[in-house]
Image (tube, rainbow, N blue to C red; front, side, top):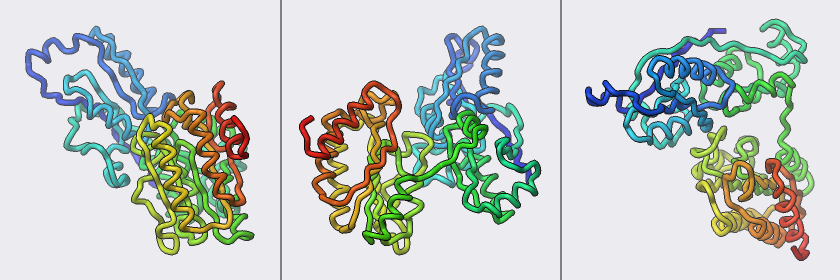
Length: 371
């Protein structure tokens, strides 16, 4: 397997500052953006570098982690910041790769950025959890072929060099691995060490229900896009997938979910994405649910699977959307009114005092009881 090495550079907006300004630079703290979560190689090196820069210049260089969109959320924050030399960014291969991987980016990286210099060289390597009974690459390939469909491949995000290295490895060896994109290498390590297993419960349920009901619809109201579900049924004529979610350009680690992704082949037109802006309120969210219901009525399914996510709640720790108890109740009422055999799969909702209240509001409305 070819080892991919890459160079990481610093990015400075409008580096060509006036000479007088450069002589006084920096005269206040400098923000150093890392586009991945804490704990990965970029983050670790950035913190070592910022400590040295702070001592060298006598001003604070502060690391700010802005994970999301395979590095594009952080890049967008830097490229949209004031061109005063006080916003730096750690750049990796993903910034070059993204131009080819993502259809829509809110910036032109080559046009809008100016490189300063190289920082380090890294090598991508493959590691496995201790629980996997392999100790060599050859043993891993043999194991993967014998256990096809059971291997997950973690990466810092779609379009990053570890992701593409893994895809190349799959092509070269003929094995199957399911790509799991994270917000950076750091968050992937605990799941790697503990051997986390991923199951798509909504997709499993929909597949089972098609045997009895023929056509099945999935409505996903989790705040994040149902990228796995979308790809599973991408070319299927018997499953409609509707997703209401944060715009993938604004959140990690999701790179799919744009409105123009509608399915292919026999499944053309049966994937319905509604990406919404940050801080979406009840009226906009409920209107999107109505649009999904209208799509569902045209499809005429025999059963419904609801991917029920409460991370859209206004008091969710991440606070992506601003959906209230009343909003969740309205969703429950509208979905119950379809009078279809319905399976509710609770998929999203970070631990908070409000989580139980959101569930109660939805279920009571769904069962047509007073709230």
